[in-house]
Image (cartoon, rainbow, N blue to C red; front, side, top):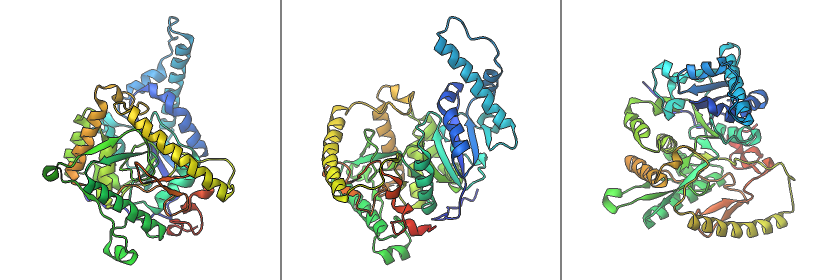
Length: 419
């Protein structure tokens, strides 16, 4: 197939498709209520695709089961079983209604196997250019975070992966650290000057004097390795976006399932941790020549503005405290893993080491790593230097909408899609 990279901006796009993937009716309890809220209240959501990786009968048999739950079960478990049947019935009703925006894509009936990459398959044929992804067990972010903020950022950066759940890769060699830091600083300078972040065209680089480079991996020559940091979700210098709460242009689906990348797809389904997240992020960044962009996953509904001096005093104090807490947390939990996601996988012995092996294999396959993300606050007074760990943080961590720069006239990124 002939695949085409998307344009760098999609300012006129007003609608998007939501894709969620599941394989068991037990997850209906996690996503049906958030899904209903999205369909009823989120503007621009015109299509929902549920990728079902189990036989259709797992849904239909649950929906058609009229037997009374076993009296030997606890009342809460009986109620949960009844609720699960109702959810399955509702999902199938939506699917069978040709006028409803939701449809179920039954992977096995379309010649596919149970595969985490099915949510990126071109056979889904999403109607909209913009695709929004959520895992079936969440987390589910708010409308303000995803649509008011995140979707607007994607419109201005539609040639990259955009999301709110970043992970960091730590460089071990000083050479890689220096190159990576230069890449992040160059990205910040480009955004601050209202350039398009990580545009690799020679004309743009010459105009804005901010050449941006990937960090080479020289494992066979110098023994370069990296560590997968699963302790924090940094705004700056992140390299992988977890799928929940991401936006992606549909043109990338063709690339992800192109025969040229069959070796990568095989690696995902055969590796013990099924690293689809880091595989997709790494692939998209090399296709686009740019790092992902991130937006805050939590938006504060509090007071819009407070005294600037008071704010900065609070931020200075909070930042120092936060750095100490983060460093202490990492030291105390060095051999632990994040248990809030991939809830079945993390229980495997040596899960963290296997994830680290996966990221080293993927970065070695491509031979380089993108410059790293920049936070929502890049190019604004809310970007604060950090003494240890990632080079910068955004303060406040959970902003109000009036602080998001690409939503404010005159803010970095606003003019890429002015209203």
